[in-house]
Image 1 (cartoon, rainbow, N blue to C red):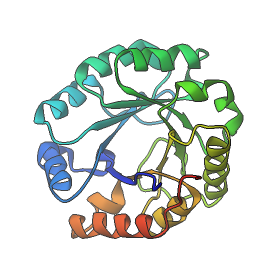
Image 2: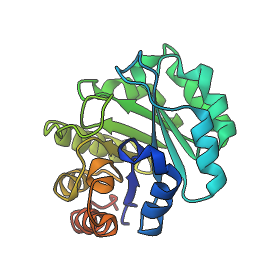
Image 3: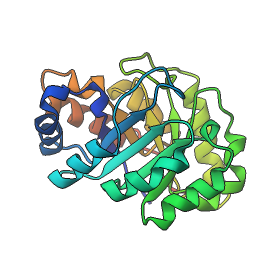
Length: 229
C-alpha cells in the first residue's frame, strides 16, 4: 500500500506583511498542510510567533496547521496551541524531560502528536514512545533559521527510521522532514521513507509557487517507498 506524501510549505519563509494572502496562495496552488515554526529564542537562536498567529490562520480555514514547537518546556504552551486550532503539534526530544507525558497531552486534545529530532539526535529516544506517536519530525538542517543547506547524512537516518517503524508494526507512523527540502532532496527523502515534506524558501521563494509544489510532489511520488505487505 502506498504511503501518503504531503507537501507542507513553511510560513517562516513567507512575507509576513502579507501572511494571510501568502498562505491562501500556496494552499490554492496545492499545499496539503501549512507548517508553522514556533521559536522562543532559547531552544533555538530565533524568535518567531505564538498561538495568536495560529488562531488567526485557523480562522481562515485554509489547510491543516502543522505546529513545530522549537521551544523549551513545550508542555506549558501546548494547550494554547491546541485551543488555537493546531491540527498537529511536534516538539523536540531535548526540550522536556517528560516526553511521554507531553505526547499524551497533545493526543488528549485530539491533535496529531509528533516528536522532533535534531540532525545529531539518535533515534533511540523514540523507542519507548512509538505507540504514542502519529509522526516523527526529522530535522534535515539544524533548527532555528530558514534557507539552510540540507544535511545529506539525514537520508540514512530516515531510511533507518522507516525500516524500524515497519519492522516493529508501526508502519502507520509518518515521517516528516524539515530543512533544505526541494524536488531533489525531496526525492531522496521519499525514497528513504519520508511522508511529509516541509519546504520553506523552495516554495515561497519560487517565481511560480504552484509549479514548485507540483515539482516537489512529482519527485516524491516518483521515488516513494511502499508499505511492507
